[in-house]
Length: 101
Image (tube, rainbow, N blue to C red):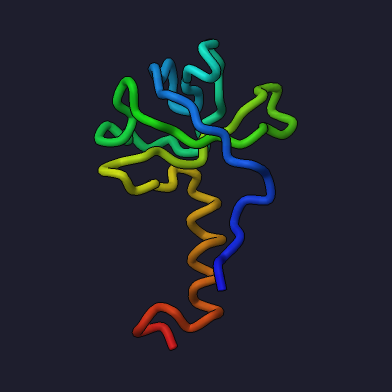
């Protein structure tokens, strides 16, 4: 059975740049938009201009979008550290990771 992590629809966008640790600029429907990035890590191997990203509609941060993943070698890599914890918890509860029984 699939794990449902995102309660909101994923929105595809294209990464442009990262002006600071928690803000990214992306191209969405031919418009430049700003998104919140809940990850202070450098992410140099992921945040490359033109990279396909996945956003969700933002909450109350005053920014309309939040970046949750970046496509790397055709695989989505989660950049929202909170989402990683939710996914791991679900996998552990289902007994799907060996060594953590």
